[in-house]
Length: 216
Image (cartoon, rainbow, N blue to C red; front, side, top):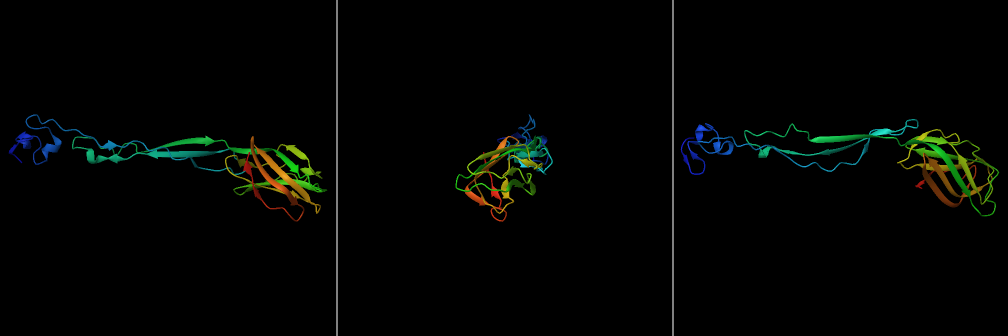
């Protein structure tokens, strides 16, 4: 409305008739618009990477994505300002992780206790997230006690496993003659997973359970 305003001057309604001119324009007779925009916050920190897929036993990798966001505060916007609500408030980054790798080798250490060897054939099993495979039934034939055995390549376990995720392993003996084991290691794409079981006994009926393998 018209009238005298000690702060904004005479006849402020000439700047913005029937509006609150004190918040939209400078004082009369200048009447220049007061411009204040919506305020964007700073970006948050990036979230952790989320898997968009998984190793299925045959794939070589999968995509990952991470996000960050910021907020818009239009309470700071005047009539002549610009809203921030259509600005980019969410941001994403994607990357491809080539982490599905083949088995490249095994190592087995039999115990040094008496009669630790066996007449049987030894094979190895690997399990991860529903993916399972076993090496050849005779990956190691008739191992002696107190000895290291090494095998290169997949030995028939031809699935691909995620080198960033845990795996389960097991060791099978097809003979009633007990074998006693101290250590097992599998190499998957240059990454080692191992299991230690001092004098762990296995035969055709016992010791066939799965074990979590440790990194390294």
